Length: 84
Image (cartoon, rainbow, N blue to C red; front, top):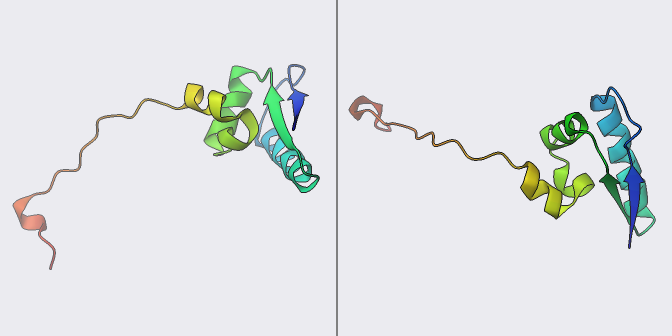
């Protein structure tokens, strides 16, 4: 069972908003249910992802949608960088 929290009315989202949603999620879990944030603005979704709470607040289907593409960065090792 889950409860949808419609945040379409939230304007000017910040980390305090994400903190309040996180606390509401924790309270819902304590009561045996799950809180799912719906209708979040792109800015709020970005903050939720930044805070590492996409899986908890947006659900797995939204987490995949929000995940950034991995950048092809490889660490190079020079001959002088051998472990000692």
